[in-house]
Image (tube, rainbow, N blue to C red):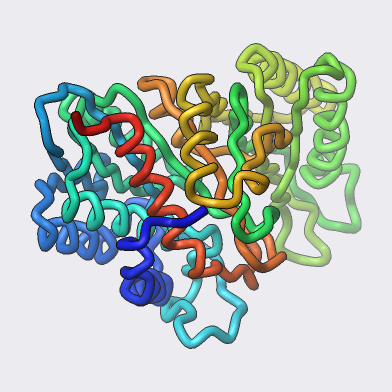
Amino acid sequence: MPTIERIDGYAEELTAIRRDLHAHPEIGFEEVRTSGIVADKLTQWGIEVHRGLGGTGVVGVLKGKGNSGMKIGLRADMDALPMEENTNLRWRSTIPGRFHGCGHDGHTTMLLGTARYLAETRNFDGTVHFIFQPAEEGLGGARAMIKDGLFQKFPCDEVYGLHNAPDLNHGEIAILPGPAMAGADFFDITIDGYGAHGAMPERSKDAVIIATTLAQALQTVVSRNVPPHHPAVLSITQIHAGSAYNVIPGQAKLCGTVRAFDDGVRALIRERMRAICAGIAAAFQCEITADIRDTFSVLVNQEEQSRIVEAVARTVVDPDKVITRTEPKMGSEDFADMMQAVPGAYFWVGHEGSVPVHNPGYVLDDKILPIGASMFARIIETRMPVG
């Protein structure tokens, strides 16, 4: 089954755009150069451009043939990660500490390919809103765009998004109806004890001991409070304390994330975390402050839009490579917030390479750019046919 021939003809140009974005990564709410390139390309293709939503977000508006009032949003994220790249690519990051290690450069490029194709053909009856979102990586870019009136200014009947997937094979497309990605909280827990000389621990309220005790206790929240049939994760990913060999620190900090597919479970975990912090503080006669932040909503694919993605995928790739019963992912995605406002679906496009996203050696396979662009384009032509 073919990708769209006209989009295949863009492959060389799309690859050049993607590699340029890759070489110049920008993290959340700093996507000035990236959003400028997006706006310039959309303008060149005759698409109405709106800038500044959610900070650096861009929305392109394109009307097709006919008089249908239907409106569909297609979304791509633009931000990179605050991490180093460890590849030898000619187009590797030129900015220290910045890396498109999640493939958002590819998502942006795919949506640009879709925009160009639809602007040239306009073989649809309705309006497309091309949503280029900043700050997906935990900084709330989707919520920022929504707060700025995204769906009031650019109403959508449906929204669609995608993600590259190195855990799938090239040419595979996966769509999972229902809860597909976990909701997430980020937390910072600060322990204020009392410092002392390392040779005189009895004079301290040792923040390191308190932190390690608290870290162990927090691991009971999921295992002893959450029902086993509700998947949940509580991970401590950072511990900060101390500055010298002979000083017991008076302060320590624990940071991490909580993941679950049920908002009630997330609320239970928050409650238990705060209760354990209070109990440990009382036991050690110290102060513990827990800042737990709702960062990502649960991503739920609607049945109708999921069926559309499945049907379209069977026209873009080999039907045998369309996967509809994949397991939900404990990772999170802030497109979930857009899908809470508007029904939609989010799918994955497999590609060559086994290095996972968020790894310093991750490499996006440019051969999937026409696949993603064709998926978006065919969704529009299928949902808003002419005549």
